[in-house]
Image (cartoon, rainbow, N blue to C red):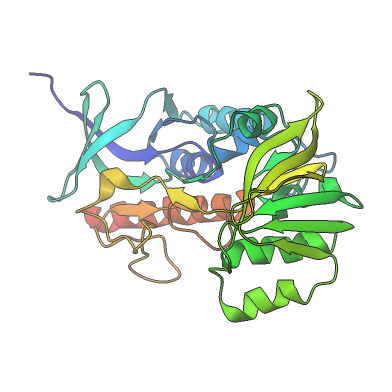
Length: 316
């Protein structure tokens, strides 16, 4: 029987939230251990160019930025480990967590920064241009700027799809919105906003068959009308997917309060506290509104400070 490893602070996840939490926790002498998870560096590793994070006037690639954040966390002696936590037990005062290899960790505080994963259509062509940064994106606010004065396509029917389409309409000459069914899922106010925007064309009952490209970047979308069976090609240089995100919170079910879509609920607004004492959340695992690297980093700082205060209170 292996002896459980006892630590002060366990950080689960390695995006901007996890690494920022690590930097603050390490500087506060909490000797944090950080598990990188399924996607070391998080969603930013699929972002070609980050131009909106303060302090990088020339911009920086997502993977490069994550390497810099990791280096900074390690500078203050964060123990950064490969692998992921796949089981927890938060019933007692000591928070028990297990790695996929069965290594047991007893942590006085836990910071959850497991993030969320964007949902994609699952087309081979879509994944190809997503991975080589050639025109597929799941974040209009992050990447819309690169398509100024160009024509783009966006897939989705909910509030965030409408919001992103509207955002793109201010930058791009033409936005074509593909909606699978015969109406929006979005609220009436959001749907009306895109319907009234002159340079947004909405195609209902439309599925994407393939993302077209020249090998380097996107050149168009092959679409099919599900009512008529008609196939058409829409020229575009950017293909945005806005069909939702899945928070990576399954292992916390039964311990941590989640909302109906799986996002972690804050126990106290304005803090990073969850319903379990000593367990805190940062980044996209709880944030379905902003989903930016800078907001994730901010909540990572909050979680580390909250964890530090929690430990200080235990000592008195």
